[in-house]
Image 1 (cartoon, helix red, strand yellow):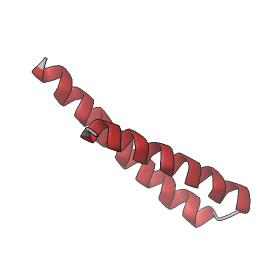
Image 2 (image 1 turned 90 degrees about the vertical axis):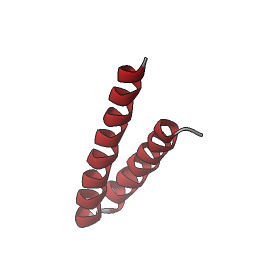
Image 3 (image 1 turned 180 degrees about the vertical axis):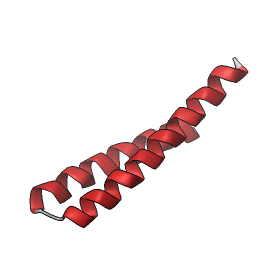
Length: 55
């Protein structure tokens, strides 16, 4: 599995966890998971930019 695929899977897992935290009313957890998701999405973009630069 490539790094990009692993990051996409992580983003998906974080999104599911974020929705569960929202449903059960854990605002601090929602915030932390949101920040983690932002970091992962930035990493995904960086991987995509690297891939575009080497093509």
